[in-house]
Image (tube, rainbow, N blue to C red; front, side, top):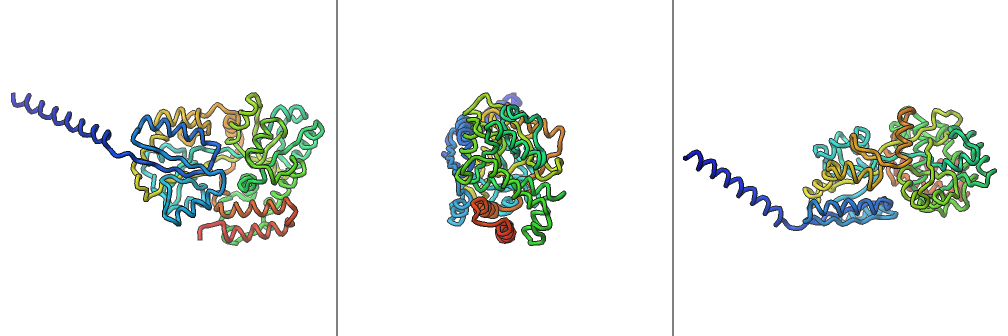
Length: 416
């Protein structure tokens, strides 16, 4: 009898404890998580994620603020003012170190264990995972397969001479070869990284040497060929490239006005498909010089979201991101079907899109370049963009531009 009473008492105690926990959840104060990021192309996807999480955690309100431009400048101003968002975006690579003091350590969180090894490395500094991406990214020249076929181009060009020959074939058919969004500073960065990878067997070290002032463009002729490629794209490109931004490139490709777009990758496909759902897209590495082995696509995580380590809602913010990375909705629905990105998660399904699928096929057969360029800060890359814009406008000579880029790398490229 005593045993029965004891068992009943334990059951009642457990029931009361459980009820108390449930009441605690229901009665917990509402919290607000603030997200500050760029990547306006993912506005709809992020709002879908937020709406889905509201069903899981109705007491959590998530405020999303997305910047079209100037995100680094505004973020720095907010940090200086002590107004750090709970989740904020920077680039990966070098900026992982720059913002380390403001970033929560996520090493032991489930989301870190869910990341692929390549992505985790892109998000780490001093052995700690300090960020997480909303996507793995593919960087390549995007081209219209049907326009290539119309011009009689049967194999993708892998050298500069092959590319110029392809451009002439396209022009002969009344097709503009290149759409160039040279109004955007980051387009120059995305192109330049292909040349940096080709210039060294250890491109991350090469970046560090440039930042330290230990090497110059003249010691790496491949980097000078970056200017050759930009010249080629302007020569065979749409008019007024300095007035064309990301949306302009997407529009030009989606309406069949150009055969290729520069400085873009997997993130551009959704916008293109909205304009032409039947377009056939392909990707290829950038032609660097006359060595076809240097022409590679690049894969990795170029952007990082961080959780502010001093966030007043740190625990709830971590719960949200862990759910994003480990829930069935996040793994199997949001990344591949809603955001339609290459998931940064181990064994997650790929999106049903042409560019990620093409990248998967290329990666099975050919080596892929690393995102070494990210180990230079965006403060440098913004300056690089300004210098290249002046070069394209013929306000600077190539020598002047190269000298200024080298100086900018030392002054702005790394954490001081």
